Length: 442
Image (cartoon, rainbow, N blue to C red; front, side, top):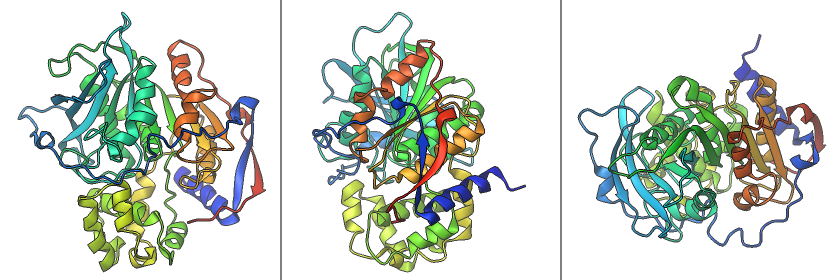
């Protein structure tokens, strides 16, 4: 019998090969006719990061000699934070895929006053693509326009804090403190997310007394962070059994099918696209975490260009990689070792013990709805309690706003479960059908 992993990725391959979009017949609340918010881009989209910040000395703070996993070992108040919130840059202990202890940076923020007697719910936010360099984490400059941190504060962190929640946002390994790059390496991203929660659960002289209700924990991620959030829910029972996640909110998740034919077709692209940056981020991260040489994945020119990833982020990085066709950066056929590693690292082949809500815009050109839908179908088949919401008029950027502005709200989804309501599940309504589309692998 074929493995579950093989079945899943084969199903996704069929979606791409046929050019068909899997659609679901679902209750009215599943397909929300919400217009794109005219102010959706006002605070910057996921890739509006033309400015790469400098690396501050805080991020070089060494691990303490007696470091233990989940330990908070440094914190720094963010002076630019609004007066009504507490915000800290933090450093905490996590592990790489070999079990070595590493430092990881992040951002911790909560309302300043009015905490419930039982403590605030804690949400771990997993951010979208900003790069892999040490200055690319969202904790560096959360209030400086056109930097990675700014794209997280307005669209994501502020609404969560305004809802009365405490939020911890991992930068991921290597994006502040030294460590291996982690782009779409699900188990490594997830370790950083889970250990960020451990680091702030209890009061500390470094961050003050922010009481947390340990029975109300969730993870919330967008794009790359949607994949990270899925991985976090997936490994939590084994990596962090002390954390009981109530739910996972997953917005336009950045799954990448580890199918050689698809990735080789991408690698043969004779044009320059945003995939130049994405594929180099993947190559560098997988080469640093698995037994794969970077030159096994990239051409000599690709290896040369990969050095840019160490000093540039977001749009600044993408622009520096936009003058060359992708097929001059990636080797074809794509490395078998890379495909095998991605098959192990991508989430979606195990039943999740916590319920998930998935939100997807059907006009998204960055995260193709076909892939999201195939993943939802897989989770439903595995028995994961899954609530799936699609916005027919929304793209990748406007999803930041629609998921919290229109019912069912992603924040209300988490709060409802915390209130003791059964997690919504519309898997029974997700009946497969096909409609021809013009979608192409780009």
